[in-house]
Length: 212
Image (cartoon, rainbow, N blue to C red; front, side):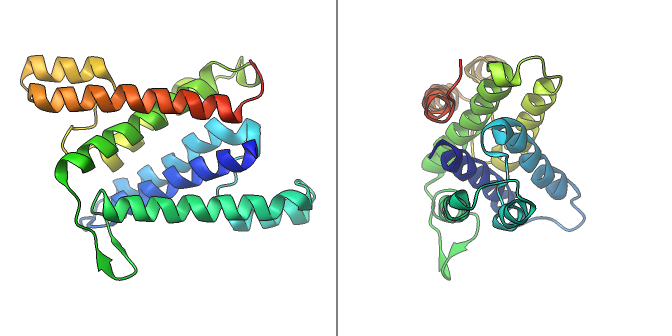
């Protein structure tokens, strides 16, 4: 079950990035492929030591045929990946206003969208930090800085345009308010979302990681 939850989380953020950066993309914008590829990279870094970081039913099929995963895991992987993609699409359309669901147009509330985007971005950042920089199974790695830094790049590009500017860090929210980059109301919303997102990431980490 832990592997399936990792596959769900990774696929969710991979697809959510696609949904957010591709819908309404401007012609000639070369950053969308960079953000999408980077989203996959950071989630592979974060979950590869637990599930292998497939986030793709076709990859799971190839791994099965290669003998790199047991047949008993295939259905669970594919269901988790599909559910992650579906939830990402629904959240993107109904809360963030990116895309449609079954032909219907999402009607997002701007405050709800800002709060959700900030929470999800902070969740992703904290989740990647915990998985790459605090575990024995990834100790001694040389990529955790890359994974963490690119998480900020991906989340800022995918989720930074919903009202808070993509703080994903209460200290940044406070600094932005003092500097006049954001109102104190916006900063307060970001701070609340950041702490909730980080707490949820810690719970998710504890749910999927067996080591210390």
